[in-house]
Length: 417
Image (cartoon, rainbow, N blue to C red; front, side):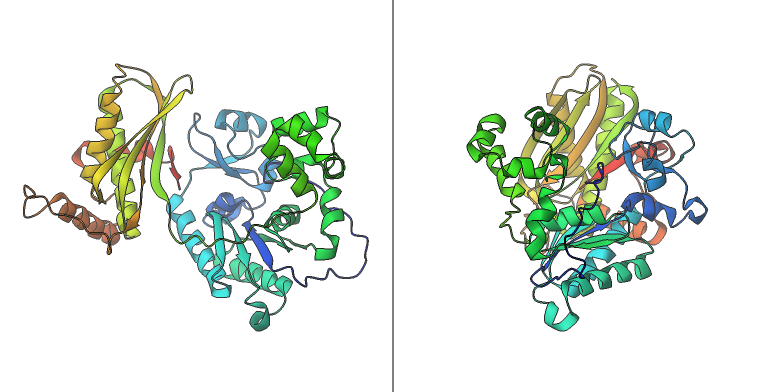
C-alpha cells in the first residue's frame, strides 16, 4: 500500500462510522524512516528527502514530497536521484529507527498484549479486551496516534475494521496522518469499490493479468465465478482473490514475541573480487549480528550467508552448529567457512550477508564449555566489547582488521530484520 495510493471509497451514509465490533487495528507509521531521520533535521521538514546509501543501494524511505516525483522505497538510488534531483539524501540511522520502533511497540503493548508486528513501523492490534477500559476502537486508535506523535514526534495512520485485511486497507487509505474506520456493515461495498491493485498480495504483474482478463475493480473479481479465477490465476491465488473480494479474512492477530532471525547485508560500492575484502566484510557483519544477539539476550544455532553476484544472481549457504552461540568469532568462522567452500575464485560480488537463525533465550539455553577453551574466552572478550560500546558508543572497540572501515561503510549497509 505504501507504493500505490488509492482514493478512499465513498460511504453511503452521512452518519459517523459505527465501529462496534471493529476491534482490529492496523497502525502504520507515515514514511517512518524518513520521518525519524527528520527529527534531527527539522529544517528539511516539508521538502523532498530520500533515505538511502550510495549510488548502488536502494531507497529505504522517502518523504511524501519526494514521493510526488515518483520516488518509492526499494527503488535504486540512481533512479531516485534522476526522478527527484532536488531531494536531500540522508544516510540511514538504524539505531534510531530501532529505538523509536521499540518505544512505539511498548505503546501498543500498553493498550493490548495482542500485538502482531509486521515490521519496525507497522503492526496489527486486537483491542477487543481493551474496549471496556479505554473506550471504542476508534477512540483507542486516536489515543495511539496522539501518544506516538507526542512521545516520538512522528505521525501514524490507523485502519479500524473487523478483519486484518480490511484494517490494513483502511490504514493505507488513511495516509498520511489519518484514521479510517470501516463499519462491519459497510465492509463489502467499501472493498468492492476499490481497484484490483488495492487487494492484499496483488502486485504489478498480478494486476496486469487481472486487467487483461477484464477485471478492473474488486467488484469485478467478486462477481467472477471462483472456478474461473482458479483456472486463470491458479488454485490458491484464485480462491484467495475471491475471498478477499468478499472481505473474508478469518486470521487472528498473532502476537510475535521474538525475532526469528538476526542478520546484516552489505552492498559494495563497486563489485568486489578480492577474498580479503570479502572476509573482512563477513567479519564485520558477523560481529554486528553477534552484538545484536547479546543485546536481545539470544543465542543462535544456524548461520546463513547470502552472496549476490554482479549479475544479481543470488545464492545462500547455511550451517547448523553443534550448539547455539552469541560469540562473534564463532559466527565469523562459520560464515567464512561457508564462503570459502563456494570456491568462487575471484568472482565479482555485489553483496554479501550474514544471518543467524534458530534463536533461543540465552539464559535458558545450556552452552557447553569446550575443554580447550582458555580461561578468558572469546565470549569474555565480546562482553568486554559490549561494555565498552555501552559506555563509549557503538564501534568504540573493533577487530583490528576493521580499523578504518567505519567511515567508508557509513550508510552503505542496511539492516535486515
